[in-house]
Structures are given as C-alpha cells and as structure tokens.
Length: 227
Image (cartoon, rainbow, N blue to C red):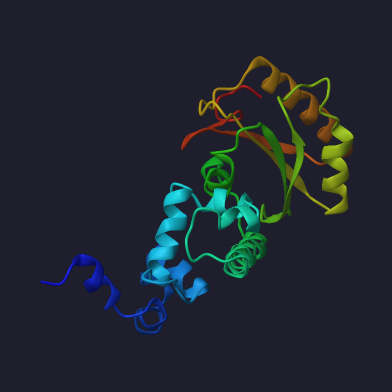
C-alpha cells in the first residue's frame, strides 16, 4: 500500500490547479507553492510552503514582516531566492490593497474596522493611523502617524493635520489599536481625541470618529458617546 506521503506527491502541481480552478480556490499553501515553484529532495513545493506556514503559525503578516534571510531558516527547500520571491509577492498584494482602498467608502465604524482590523489586531505596540477622506467619505490615503501609548501631551496635531492638508482631505478618521485586545477607550484616548477634534474644527478638517481596534472587536468613540 502506498503511504500518504507518496500519494500526496502524485497530486497535480499547484500551478495546474490554479489554471484549472483559479487562484480563489487554492489554499494558502498552494498559492505559496506557485511562487516557490519547486521543492527540494523528497518535499514538494506545497510541502515546503506548509513548513513555512507552520513556522509562522499560518500568520501571513508575520511572514511579511520577516526578513528574507530569516524566512528560510529551518525550512528545507526555501532558498534565499525563493524567500525573496515570497516577500516580493506579498508586497505586491499589499500595494494592490492600497490601490483599492482609495475607492473604499466609509459609511459606518464597521467599515473602518473591516479595512483596518487585519493589519492592526496583532500589533504588539499601539499605533495611530489617520485616514483621509474626500467629500463622499471615500478613503484617499491612510498613514501611520504615531507609535506608542496615545497621550495628548505627545500627540502633535500638526503631524496629524499636515498629512490631512497634504492630501486635501475633507475630513479624517483616527484609528489606533490596543495590543491587549480590549478596545475600551482610556481616559487619555478620549482626552487626546477631543484635542484633535478641536484642532480639526479650527482648520475646518473635522475628525469624524476615532476607532479603537482590539482582537477581532472594535470601539467607536462616537458611537459610545465619548466624543
């Protein structure tokens, strides 16, 4: 009887499955295998991809943040060239997502959460993003403005609104994360937000809301009545 290992070797290559079914039907390991192209020794490209995913607990964000040199360590068959191909492919995906976000319309706090949750929920440090909106509340551009605990004494409105003015924003949204996973706002979160709202009103670029991202959950300071 053939072992499961030998049976797996006879499965159609990921490239053939992609051509037959389209990329949407492929597992993450198969998509990575298309980028890797070839395996090593007795391991198929899919098995090399599975080793990589196992190393990073299936977290593509961690893979994106890792260096090419570190990516292949402990993964047999993942050469520096293949690791660089993976990094380049993920970066292309990130840039494509950035392009589409320009057409992303915000009509409710849940829209902000959908846009930002995947990239912010696992961060180990607090970061503050500013989303610039046009008059129809489409996202023009987003940018990380600050890293560290939100504190009104060190968050400078000029940094926030310089970005908004550069992008000719009609309004902005603030988004930051709580690494604890609990999106409940602190007193300092509310205080800092109110100061930025006051500054925005003064220059006629309103701060519409401040969304706090937790682990799969979020809080809107506007919906909570905190601002």
